[in-house]
Image (cartoon, rainbow, N blue to C red; front, side):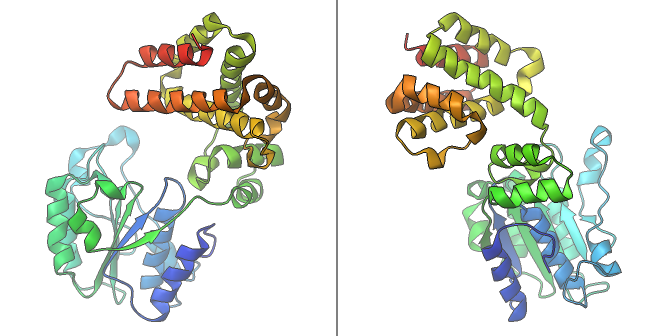
Length: 342
């Protein structure tokens, strides 16, 4: 049923058990970080539900169940998103957001379709992707279906932010939790199936932090350049004590060409600071960026665990400030002044 899907063995076994005992809930909630396979597993459930061979993944039914056609990114029309998108199998449908929201009309269309009897299979499966993007109106419309679920339909909500769903929705769904995929499994997939070199696969697997989806599309060369810049920030702070260089790094992070990389740069910076902290504390086994052992070791010897810990605190404070719309330039300057200990 889940052939080719990587990681999350416990979730896989739980779903398989549901089918074995014939008790697939009418409403499921797939939660976990972005890129760990939640949507792929939801499609696996759909295939298993409509395939007479038990979700083999190879027959024409399974192939049709997984083939969807969505509007192109540069040709998005709001009206197109006011409905359920069906795969080439008319018993497998999906609701996806229009920009930042799932439209209430799409949920109403799902409610209508869920009450139709299956066309080919014994059941119908509807996936709501990025379910946290339902506004209150859409969520309340979904509640009507969840309160009296049709016997022949199953709804799977997929989200990385379950806390944004109404408590009444969460209480009417059975949650299946997904976690980060092990770095070794991600690395093996990238090298064997995506054509990454062994070195690039190792780095992408580490940088993706268990997100298979993120790793698969990662520009490893760009990541190395970004990581090198953030390593320079720590070196300027801990070794050189160069506030001017730090402020210049802040300027570069806020350059127009880097506007989409500001928060990813903070992520990289925090990972490096954490590596320095654990090295300084004598726990080298927990280091993430192992290929930078010499540089991180020098930083650990110079900065020490307490100062590295203070960098992490400062980064987290910066994230909190950004959440309330603090100007990025001001945030970066304040962060690096803290790094320099001024």
